[in-house]
Every structure is written in C-alpha cells, then in structure tokens.
Length: 209
Length: 209
DNA sequence: TACGCAATAGCCCGAACGGGTTATTTTAAT
DNA sequence: ATTAAAATAACCCGTTCGGGCTATTGCGTA
Image (cartoon, rainbow over all chains, first blue to last red; front, side, top):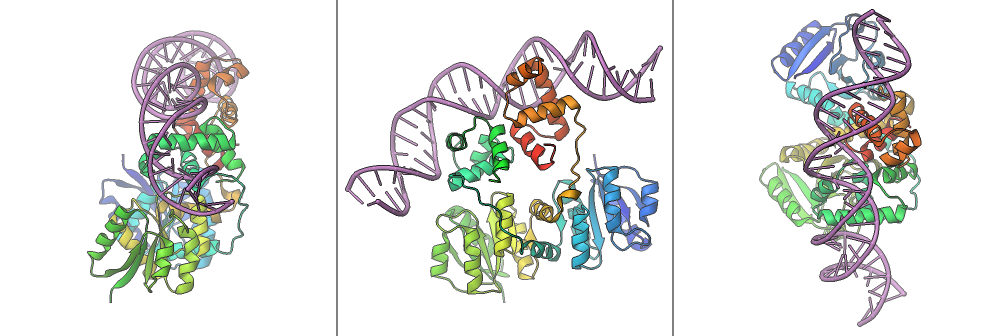
C-alpha cells in the first residue's frame, strides 16, 4: 500500500507541482491538497503524512500542527518553508513537526523527507539540523549515576533497551551470542535483576539511559 | 582543491574500507587514518573533516571532540557509531560534533555527510534527527499516541514493568496464564512491539507509566 | 611479575516467552 | 435487540532467555 499524503500550500502553482511530483510515483498517493489550514481541516481525511507550508493566510502552518496531530496522533508532518530561520524551526519542533525542509529542495529530497518521517525518523535539511543542534548545546549536564557497569556492558544495556535480541546484538557488535549472554548476565548481577524487562525499568529509573 | 579528511576508527577492516571509499573520489582526500585518538593527536595534521568513531579503546570519540576542535576550531567532526542512543547523541552534540551517522550507512550517505558538514550544515540520520528534536520538545507537547489500551491491558502493562512473569501475574489477577498471555499479545499489537523489554521502554517513553 | 578485571567464547538445560488460532462469556453501546 | 468490544481460556510450537559453569586473552597496576 502506498503512503498517503495531504498538502497544505497556498501558492497554487507550487501546490500543483507537488501534487504532480508526488503522484508520479506509485509509492505515494496525494489524498488531498488545499490552499489553507481551514479548508484542510474541514475536509480532513486521514493520511500518513502532511506537507504543511509555514506561511499561510489565516491559520499558520505552525499553529496547524497540533490541530492535525489531534486528529491523528500517528500522523507525520513535514514543514515546507522558504527560510531556515531560527524562530520558526524551534516553534515547529515544539509543536510536533517531524520534518522541516525548504521549498527549493530538489524533488528527490522532498520524497526522501516523506519517506523518512513515514519510517519514524525526522527530516531536516543540514542547515536546519545545525541550528537544532545549536539549541541543545547550552544544556546542563545530567546526573551521571554510579553504575559500576563497564563500557561494553553499558553499550549492551542500551541495545537491550532498544528491544534487540541477543543474536542481533551479537551481529551488531561483532561478537558471539554467548559473549552477549555473558555481558547480560554480568549486568543482571550488578543491577540485581533477573530479566530484560526489569533491567529496562532499572535503566530508566536510574537514568542510566 | 579537494576536501581533506582524517579518520579515527579502531576496527581496521572498516577503517580501510573508509579510506578506500573516500579515496576513490577526487573531491576527497584521506590525509590520515588511525585506530585511536591518541595516535591521531600525536601525528595530527590539519584536515577539513574528521570521521570519528564513538567507541574507541582509550579516549572515546566523544572525549576526543574538544581535543580536536582546539587544534583547529573550523574543523568539522562527523561521529561514526553503530548505535543511535540518546546519551551519546546528546553528549556528542554538546561536545561540538557536526554530524552523527551510522557505520552501516551507505557510502553515498557517508560522503553526503562529509560534504554537508564541510558546507557548514549538520549531518544527522533521520532517527538521530528525531531524537535531537525530541530533546527540544517540551514534555507537555509529547502527546504520545496514548494507545487505546483497555483497562485490563494497562493493568498488565504495569505489572510487566514491575518485572513480573506471566504466571505471577495470573495468580495476582485471579486469571489463567493463558489469559495473561493473550492480554500481552494484544498489548504488543497495539504498541507495535515484540518483547517485554520493548514494551517497558515504550511504556516509559510514552509516559503510559 | 603477579594479580585483577574486562572482554571474549563455549557448553548445558529447563523455564519462559512470543506467535498463531479459536472460542465462550460478559459488558457496553447503538 | 443487535452489534461491538473486552475479558476470559485453551492449544500448539518453536525460539529465546536466564542461570550455572569453565576458560582464554589482553590490559593495566600494584
């Protein structure tokens, strides 16, 4: 089944281009395309992804993000913009946008962005990514809890919290399953737990993660 | 003039692959490649970009970031990792990394990343970008898709996060293990996970707990 | 140099888990 | 009154996990 897409973009020429571009690939289907948030919400039908212009008459794209998300929380939203300006980037992210790309992006990049957010990732242009990272730098450090875990054990602990099986970890770390098994047993000993579920709980509670 | 690149990666096979890959393009030149931060710093010569493994014997890649940056502030650093784990991402960014990509990335993506940081942008995989964005997002707006779990399912979810086995739960809830089994399977379906460890992670991240 | 620790690897075994399927009863909503 | 959803229960089957072992290699450091 193809990925369904909604579009909100007031510039009719660009809107049509998007529809045309996206429709030309069988993996993607444009379910609807409107020039305003108001019209989109009125005639709303569920889609996998929405391409949302930031500068819109009436409700802005940024204001619209939570409105669409409350219709369907799993919906992914990619913002379209002309400028990579700090303020809008931050606001869009705070409101729950999943991607932030430039209108002048190549068709390939736009389709990539759709695919990336659909796959659960985020889609940012390199410059936007840099600015997003810049916001994070002045953050305070968090409490490095004791945890007598060795580096390797910490590594494996992380993998456990990502739901991996011992075998997958073994492949990923270029070691045998038995070794993974051993590390896990050592982790259990140190944290005094007896199952993965428990170790994950502990990891979160003790902020090892 | 081509972009000069330094590499720090302890896994010799992968290091050689990188050298080979990058050298095969005239736009990029590998100036040096070492298996450890210590050796790299000892024989350091200026480059435009450094590819830096996170998990290294001795000084870790993350600890090395500021050391390289103080040699040359304009230097761009791309972290190489097998994991997209929150902690390392945040630490790397705070220490001044310009990119964060997976070792399993395709050659094209790796070269893209180099080009992007060289051009002044940041290079993040979609999943890393998502996590970086998540750090910026206030908890309040994290309206995570509070799954449609039934009361009984929520109850069992809690018990799972307390590390109980199905049998213990069954006794506690006065139902059979098979029923517990069923509820858990339904929970897995709804949360789209496949193990207790994953369900615990999800429960914490989405504040179902 | 000897000791400890981390990381690696293997073996065995039983218990627990995850996935698929079907079915009955109760409760809630329409 | 009919339907839908939730809770209950069972069966089968293969896989993974957890625990208890031993053992080798390499790296620091006392």
